[in-house]
Image (cartoon, rainbow over all chains, first blue to last red; front, side, top):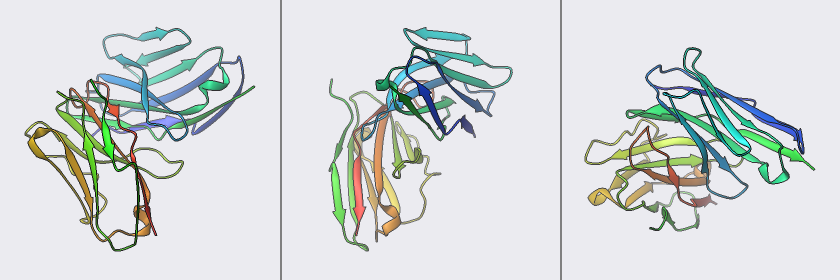
Length: 110
Length: 114
């Protein structure tokens, strides 16, 4: 089955700086890669996703890149703000399986 | 329509008791998942239901845990003879498909075993 690894486990940046979170996956059949944001005490919520037929997707300050050859994908947050502080989960899968990474706790210092 | 609904939101019980947690998925979503999240930890997959197919129970930590999904909609997660290590937030999610669609999470049930 699929195995997703996520790095780093914690990340601290200064407000206005960029943050990058990286994930790798094991199953070459995986074709869908969502990212979820979980604020303290709240439910995880989808913030962006990418499918295997594209290499990059952008939505305002967040972007995701996918390298199918290397089996890794990354979340990029630019111009970080204190409200970006949360735990971010990557996930990867296909119609048969979907697995989550262990999460990255992002802290944006004002 | 409404999002994923879970009940109760909080449950405190004594060690050894049985508990039932309920999940009402988004209407029309055929895939339903249960996860366990301990404080400050990641999402531990427990069980997955897809339509009328046999559930994927590969994540259940012991035979004290079971789940069912009646009529392809509401699901109940049952923990028998609860232990203190069962204390966690239990999250339910649903999606239109297993691996190729976003999962929509409920607010979870915070379970505390005394």
